[in-house]
Length: 133
Image (cartoon, rainbow, N blue to C red):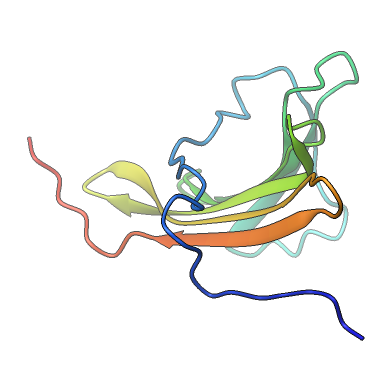
């Protein structure tokens, strides 16, 4: 028998706090790597990994536009997030009036529980953005 349960909308108070900030992985001390099977297309994937002395820093892949160098996607894995067995965050970016904003954020995590772990997936999409100058 399957012992898992799925809910599309948790009750009020069960939602995790939504964070829109993304770490600047190119300003931190990471080991950067490229991929040998790069096709030369529009997107350029760059992998990044931290050394073992920095356990709180995420690892992952940044996909940037090859011509403008703006980020398109950012996949983050937090190997030692407090209270979580697994924790990942992914961002999709858009450029509006010369500013870069995340327009979609996915958070997938497994929290430790008393008898069994609890997993969730939180998707946030920004569909309207106004810039005031």
